[in-house]
Length: 416
Image (cartoon, one colour):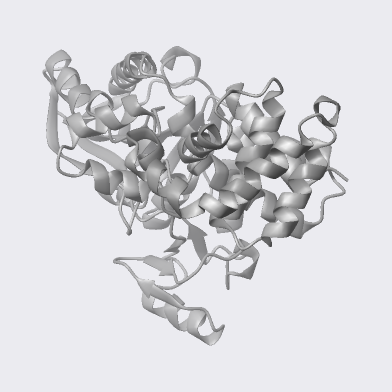
């Protein structure tokens, strides 16, 4: 059976090739159906942790082995083992023995002694090496240097708090379906089940500890959904009312779609360019027992999907860098490149312009991103207002990552 360490090292290899954590873990699950649920859970934990602390692991590896090894798989194996020794409760002897065994299968086994020596040196020098890593900008923040520079420029007083939030484990926040009950009622249900939770505001509830959705009371019946507290603000800000014609552009996986339909009786169209992801919207709506018109199409190519009838409300949740949700997707900070932001900004502008033409006079459009960088947010808003004299801003808000929520940007526009 392929070892946990080798599988986690494979995740790091795929990351170097530009593959996301989500896609890689799903692919490994398909390729290794023999893995028990406990091993899959452990793999996810080690893979996410290793990617979250990738810069620190690289720094420590070079301190232990100054020259790159001729077999990249050995370096990735060492980084995974260092992560296990530094940040998990795995038995140290098992970590070292497992890594040495796996090293015996690589490069003809010529580096077994090196792997054994490097890991035992780390055990002896652990505190000193981690302290040195903490003093290095990239290794200490576990973010690319250019990313930290962007954060410092945009948030000179908040950048360190954002980095710390990015490196933390995200909370599990729920959205209580107001068609069934309210937050206080669901808190009572959780208490009866022996589950600790607290109300944030409105219909948002944060669990004391994450757990599988199958263990959430009423989840299968649509009583509750998993959705970050910051993401829950989108449907609330759009200000929907019964009878309105609403468009949810870029709707997948459907969290905001479901929330909108929980708030009011709407004629809602959910649009997404990816038909596979759109199927997840359908699954979510089925669970919630709600209905919408689903269309697989490019929101910017209006002629391919719009019937010409204006919408009263449009949620423009546009593609972005996802820089606000790094703690849920730690691979983002390593997969993004500085030039990506200009490309994304052009895509966002094109989509906003196209969707604006679908909005009724007097209607409202919410521009939404899960990014915290200005070129995708306030700079985008200013440029849009300059291009469209009939657009008025009703207010915008940046949510930076913190204990309560991930990072988001919202700007509400009215057509006058």
